[in-house]
Image 1 (cartoon, rainbow over the protein chains, first blue to last red):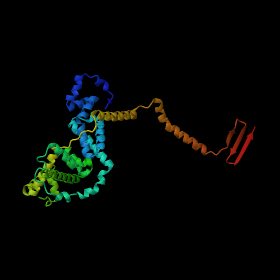
Image 2 (cartoon, chains in turn cyan, yellow; image 1 turned 30 degrees about the vertical axis):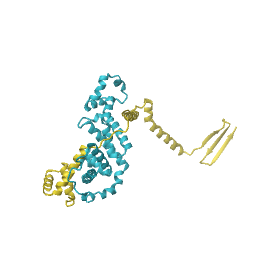
Image 3 (cartoon, chains in turn cyan, purple; image 1 turned 45 degrees about the horizontal axis):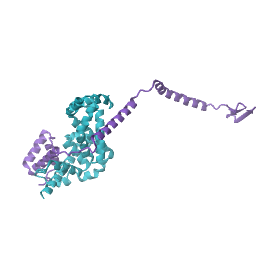
Image 4 (cartoon, rainbow over the protein chains, first blue to last red; image 1 turned 135 degrees about the vertical axis):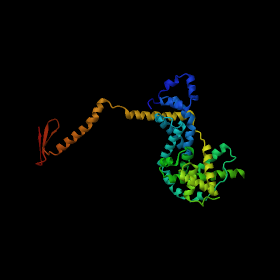
Length: 215
Length: 149
């Protein structure tokens, strides 16, 4: 990025009508302006997507301070690499990819994955999730959206970091098994067994919520 | 209904089928299994429903800081990173540029000088005080002579 963040003179002297453009402009336009060094446009992008980026980091890290720090770092990285964004995906998707990568780096640094290796043995196929009864009905039927989101968040907190990571990358990031394996540096078989466990556990936890409500 | 009558491979393939990750031959095999085995069909339904629900209800989060404070922290980090990058890229002044190339040569010359003089155990003449005395030492002969005016 050539311009740096010291180009406020231009935007501060901008007519109010142009400033309003930032509010109504689509992401693509804001990205285009930001790529030319327009910090107001970039700030608008931050404002629009900050909650989503923070939520994604929070889902991965389960720690408010770490999520906050990593989400801000993601915005710094995105400013520095904005010239690499060519619109192949949406800006939000591109941003979530950056924050997920930062979370993975952080997790690797903390070596949490390795510390959990003992738990993973317990949760391997043939373990508890193989014995769980299959939930025949939609476990979320009749639940309010907000309640369901909250419950999903709580259920995800009960997964180990290794399982949660794979689940987030597959279900929310929309990545294929191969891509997850590459990013997390595990085999496709491990991705599949972790995802299988995570989904079955989530189904069970969500079904538990339905039972609680009906009692 | 339990899923434990199926092999591990079948369990994972049912999931991969629901995720569209199987090639055509494996896909047909899983479709056949689902059609024939109620447990496989139930598992497929559960995995698919779970995935659908998760994707439609991603947990939301709200940055626990004001917009201004959050942005100011990002701005500060960007500025710091750019200043660091600028320092790293800053051109070196011409004089210092020459010194950079000259420094190794000066170092080599100094070492060579020290080595050369250490290898010649010749007599050493030391002036003591304000030229009022002079000392001559010959290490080879083990003699030291001093003149005092």
